Amino acid sequence: MATDASFPISRADALAAGLGDADLRRHYRRVLRGQWISGDRATTRDDLRRAALGLVGSDAFFTHDSAAELHGGITPTTDALHLGIPDDRRVRLPGLVVHRYLDRVPTTHARGFPVTTLPQTFIDLASRWPLVDLVVFGDSIAQQSATAIDEFRSAASAGRGRSIRKARRAAALVVAGAESPYETRIRMLMTLAGLPQPVVQHPILDRNGRVIYRLDLAYPEYRLAIEYDGDYHTNAAQRGKDLARREEIERLGWTFVVGLKTDIHGRPGQLLRRMTSAMASLGMPRPRLSDEWLLHFPG
Image (cartoon, rainbow, N blue to C red; front, side):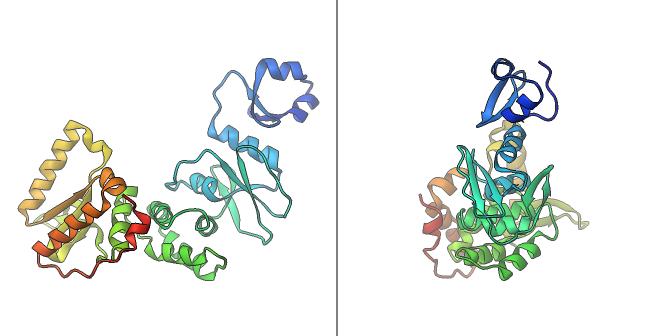
């Protein structure tokens, strides 16, 4: 049985095209209720998205986590697909979360799919995601779009609802330049603990004024660098380069505090103590720490 680009296909469309139930069972497999795909290729995420739109209706659009994913932002892992509909009908389908929008919301297209706009997606996510995840998403989008921060803040300022205060706070914390989600998580740990805001991606210049290195987070006045050491650093060659780079910057008078993924998820308090100890050794004023970080970084 030949396939074509219109798949996934509904059972009704298959029958209208002259295919019987036996053909569907023999040559296709079901991906969502009433939606079938050719059995000779792997199911993709886009196949599931198209099937979901076919099930929910032509007026449906992707929202929340699914819109964030389509916009290219960094999101928590989720299998469920989130869709919106512009009315109050109840739609309950396995694997789908359908949100009802009684007021018209702005939509656009991303990767060929109907989605809520980036600012609307940001506002919607505030109702579902923790503050830190929302800022991680915002930072990742700000890397791609020079206007994203202003759009997030404008939408949050004009918005209303139970989660709008979180959206406003998250929008105010999104910055341009963050290069990894864990860099953002370390910055958020510092922010929620009440430490001064560091410079993001601070450049180190050579004698000719050329940028030779960039530090994840820095307090240039005190030459204190806060860096995230990622999983890719387990590569021996890369680790050697990173250590040589760090030693060269240390010779310029910089002090490093290095955070790992295990620090963020398992020892955030220890990482904060290492930061404040380094600040003290460099004569940097330190505010009294807030306990708010404990609400967002258990461990």
